[in-house]
Image (cartoon, rainbow, N blue to C red; front, side, top):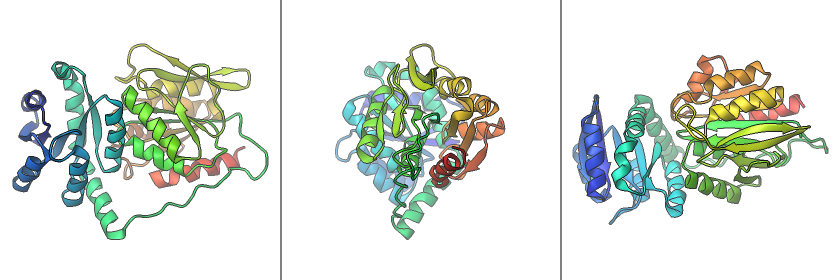
Length: 355
């Protein structure tokens, strides 16, 4: 039985979430709290398997509570956040502090019941025993060992003027993907071939994510635009409300955005991006599948491999959820399976040896 604690200052939100949890097989509402102070008191008496947490609350904000929780009792947390630009930026910090997933509140809270399927799926995924164990290892090791300063990325991939203009790197990710993507990009040089990313998240979150990475990295990170040429040293993030794919014009790879129905329950979908890479870039592609729920992009990654792409799949131990990468491995889509901290080096190594 999955025990869920709901922390939100809105009585209506607490009621809707409580009803969804109580009527779902295998779940029970442990308790509710209208602010983190009360949540802390309740957690002293009972241990939750999953916590649903609002970002903006009185007396103590969600981020502060999240940090305190991970230091004292690491627990899978699903963030509830309204789709404001401010909250989008705050939520990105929540992932760094250990949040498992984020669910965007609709502008009209009365529409929250329509999110029932997503809420249930997220709770069940967060409750997997491996998730809590990974959180404990992550935060216990951080306290014991202190912060580890990563090695700086190589300044350039090649020491000559040789450029990899005929290459493209595609990355797919979902739950836990924002921190995974950030770690990989920090390890890449400024002349890396263009990178196209599909990360499952709402529109305003993708804009905030791109803005933050662009401010932190020597690479140029931006939201993808239709017709844009994929260039070395650039990272293109699919906007959160459109599918992103690759097309070709002569020797140039171009980006293409389109609306349309969800694919594998997602828009943007990793399947759409990876299928286009298989069709238009084939052996000139490096594919990377990172942590995430479900199987979006897994079969398309196998098509990439069949077309000659070199595919890197994140291993189970370093993945928050080994859903998408696990399925890619199961389908035989992986050229190599690696922990997160080895992926950037592998990308560089493969390009040096095969360009």
